[in-house]
Amino acid sequence: MWFPVAGSEQVPVGKTYAAQIADQSLVLFRNESGVVCVLEDRCPHRRVPLSLGKVIDGNLRCAYHGWTFDGLSGQCVAVPNLAETENIPASLCAKAFCANEKDGFIYVATADTVNSDSDYVCQPPAQWEYEKTAHGSAVVSVAAEDYLAAMLDGPHVLLSIFGVHASDFYIGDVVIEEGCLSLDRTAVWTLKSKPHEKWWGLSTLMLRTEIWPEQSAVRVQLLDGGEQILLAAVMAVVPGKRNTSQLHWRCYFSKSYANGYARSAPLLLKSVAAFKACPLTVFSAIDGSDMANLMVGPSASLATELNEHDEHSVASSDRIAALNIPVCESTLSSGEDS
Image (cartoon, rainbow, N blue to C red):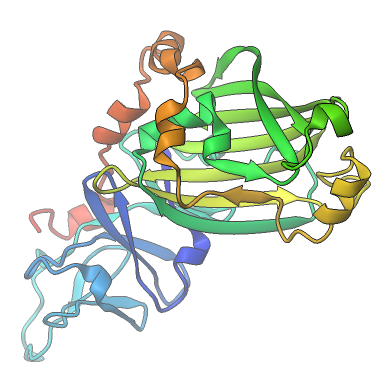
């Protein structure tokens, strides 16, 4: 499958981006054609991080001794002071990984990758029209598996949607389908300064959280009483070092009252929402007390239910720890002893 590791905005032309998947360090950059290349973030010469280097003519030059590598194959294409009569051995190559870019996210291939559109999980709901998008990224001091669990138990400690309060009342049980866990909970329009019960009545909203634990990805949807989508957001939760997670997210919404996220909101909220650049806020600083006090709910049976649904599936934490990204065939042919 394809594992999302970064947003497209993280890898501009001519720049490097250091990514991390558990214990695997990666460097991402674009070649002359704009195609995203992914190499191990380690020069095979002196093990200096290649992310410290520069992109020169679409290739990546190490900052230490200037060895230059092709991004698709990992092959070393230039060594300073090497005589014109000397050939660069095929074994001098960096480890390259298979990558793809889709819907604003960059993916790398895991060991069981097949070319299927369903593997690109970070995308808005199918056949839903939206007008605007927003994106962002952050590093949070929460392990990826804990972040995914909190998305099921209490998403309010991780993100907020302007004018919306998600309750603790679940609508049904966790639904598992094709490796995705989905949970609905009730939500209401409200303002923090005024209790919704007194001022607005009980508006009918629903917050749907969908999680792909094997790909460490999340989709959140805000729906009205007729289950029409008002807002959607997708997020890659990439496991980082020292129990941290790299977040890359995109939000899809409309500002018009006819089909926007606030079309069923009270009048005052509508007027304020019109000035909001994006109604979604993903917290870059997460309160440790809120996480500690969050009661274990739907996430308690996450691993068990996923294994019962598909005997080949594994819990998110085990899947991440055992992540084994294959080297591209072109790299193997140029010498896999690098």
